[in-house]
Length: 379
Length: 199
Image 1 (cartoon, rainbow over the protein chains, first blue to last red):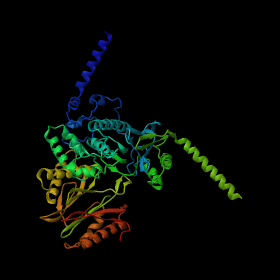
Image 2 (image 1 turned 90 degrees about the horizontal axis):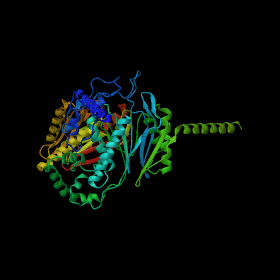
Image 3 (image 1 turned 60 degrees about the horizontal axis):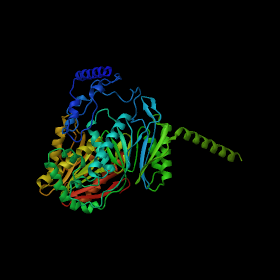
Image 4 (image 1 turned 45 degrees about the vertical axis):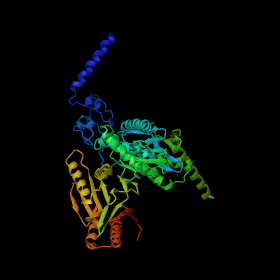
């Protein structure tokens, strides 16, 4: 009985909280029928966060694409507190995202490496964070920016990719996953959301019997290689919710095009994929990316040594070296280094290494070399 | 930072764009293509704010294709340019204006070649030659001096190379290579990339 009373009290409190919310948000969002709807937590909870100081009074909001009704009341997104502390000294150029992550493609697949320091306004919040998050068996994403945003959006991406796989019977390519993430982040452009990720994956390639007469044909991968006559996956998804007319249109289009696509399907893409996606809207394909405040240091090491023909050991060692050098120079990177390797069989992870040991090893090496040179010159 | 240029001849349009995709001080890509193919004879060159460029250009691209699917014939370059400008103008006074600068180049069977200059404030001008970016300050006077309406294709490519040479000499940023394409009645032709060192 005591428990019952407690629960009614709890529900009363919850009702009161809901009444104090001046904007009708939660209900509108959860009732959205758009297939592209994703859950935004109850605004009341966000508003009553204990950390109230330092908040920007007028939130900068973006209403996003007009067609998406789930964002009809953008003012419901509460004021977010600034990510970095106020800087007294102006920076020479916009320093982003306290971290060092890198990823590159080579003959043995895709290698991703990152440090593990999670910083918060000048203090190390966590020395052993995980910045490379596996999304599914053949896709790994490095994260940079706000840790919470990255973790959340990676989970949303995993969910959407799994749904795609269940609906269409094959994995979405890395480029498609990057496009999906980019489109999901677009409504938040201009807000404080900060995600800069590189998606490293291995595409399984499409099925060779591509001449099938169903509307899967219109949803082939959205890599930039494709010519402009194909409708992109995102458009088809948003129109699928609408009544049958648009869906049937895409079906007839695809059936007339699958014949042409048959010859193209045989040259299906199977292999490594590397894409950089940023919350400001950038989406780039490439063979080498480094993201974060330590990225300039990492780039200079990688540009010297990364070639297509590296062996796995050489690639791992240059990735380690690049992260190590960046952690030496950059205050916001440090502690350990994580290395993930993605191949056709999936991703594998190297044991986490402490860079402090690496520092002492290097110091020892330098000392020995100096001694050796000292003894040879004295002879 | 980014640079676009277009030169219209008697029966062709020559366009070029740099290949750098940058993020603050780092060049993230050296071979980035800033041209979007709207149809067989229309190219849209798009520079500006990071995500806006691709979003807006792909939106226009897909809508032009949709028009073709619905009506059975393609939009003319002039119609496509006006459509693009209308979209820019509509979004300008909304919550999410697109900060993009565009060049639209195309060849129409009826009207001939056309080069259209558009900027982020939704202005539209049909011009014989045009450029976007900081590099435009350095190269527009070269175009003023040497442009003639009856340039041959080779002369236009030479004029383009003069502009690139000037950029390499005086522009503070390094733009190592440029994509070059030519549009005429036969469609879009890829031409040789211009890099530092090509004569």
